[in-house]
Image (tube, rainbow, N blue to C red; front, side):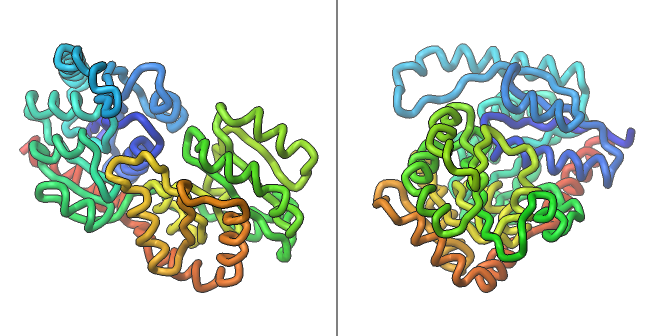
Length: 359
């Protein structure tokens, strides 16, 4: 192997999948050995193992903003997490650490600095999380998905958000596999790696009308919303309900439109496919960054925004139908946000940092 790199990520797919995309680019371009550092028993552990990477667990606890009194033991927990991360890094001896945010990134990044291992950080969102805001102060290189994110991080460069490349399957192939004709309208509803209660509530209210208007629908609910969604769609054979969609690229590649949250990683994947979407920002996102993300895409004509707090019955149908009427121009606008070389660029920077340490 040319070099070993540790990926520090966790919490949500928005932190994990960009790290895995850079890991793939490091393997392809630099013959790198990849190990992922995350929380044991977490989604990042499963996704990392599914991607074929070794996984090392480090326990980390969140900073709770709403229930501040539960943070009393945080300093002690943080010291323990840093110590555990140092132990893992000593055993693995990576030549660089690449961190994308989430609770486990902070102790792992601090451990990298204490061990004098090069640290590269990437922040996907327009409003950086606590871990990346702190790590940016000690990192060797800092990247951001947008100019707004870069402006909030010391020394950051705006490069876009890393996603895995398209796999060569054509729209025609993907639609044929689903039994879709050219004239069929296909809507993919994905609320993130764990589903989205707000999106599930909206679709439950309006799925009947969407089906009446000719839409075939793939509805990814998350485990929590699965039973209710299957009950709602029980008599709608045009709707397929799944707790998790493993082949997101297959779904996006076949779709006419999407209905999604507006996290940075989701937006990067929509852009790569040129897939217009009705965006429903997560209302509790830090700094309201999901609505900030969404409004940028809406202003460019690539999306329509539906805010949960202002939702009225029928809004989703109107947004979907309105976006479909201008699908061609919206698709071109969405493609203008695509950064297909982002993972390669970051991988090269990580490799440079690693080799600089090696002398």
